[in-house]
Length: 258
Image (tube, rainbow, N blue to C red; front, side, top):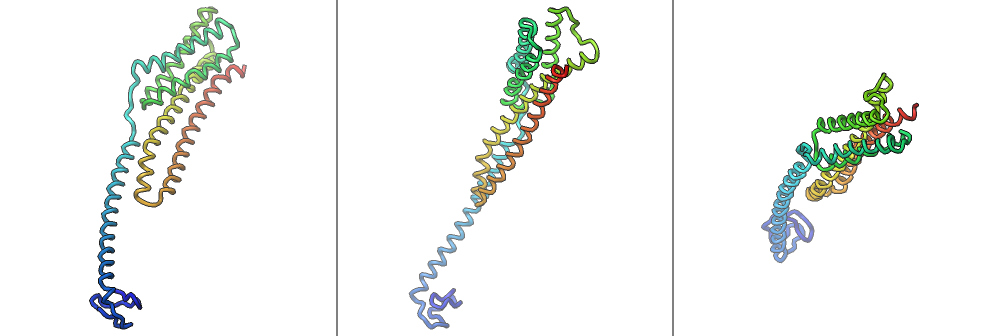
């Protein structure tokens, strides 16, 4: 132990400091008590460390399970009716009103056709994860049937051929269908981003609590999470913007380029 007067290193059993020759009789019980308290505090620190590690393990497992891939769910009959058949029917109705009834410029039809599929794709992907192959089929089939149905309506009114004649008409047919399909895909991407954001927010509470429990570096952890979130959001936003631009180009360039 150390002498409380001269801080010299002395024998634990000494009652008089051999250096400064002062009596340690009154201080020795106090020093022994302090030593016992230090040992108890060290033991409590060890227990607290074990509890932190156990809590950290539980938080990691919960955070990991919350961020695991979701189970892919096939759309039910209600999903097909509300998110596939509904936009198809609206596109045909819009074509009938703009082209057949009011005989307006087809550019109005192209613009409206870009807006109709997007919210239905968003609603379809925002609730649950869907198989990608099925989403691709829904986008392709809906856009193809929409353009084909418009061609049938035009044929019934004007007596024109249902299927395109010549490469130019086929190209416009495909471009128009692609613009509708890409609009639907843009909605799917935005809906998926919204669903992923909700999942991340649910897991954020666990991860932040874990960081604050394990170490004092919660601020750095929050900054790291913010950077990762920005990159994820940026990637999804760029993808959605790309499909939107592609849809606009495919839908309008055939009309504007004439």
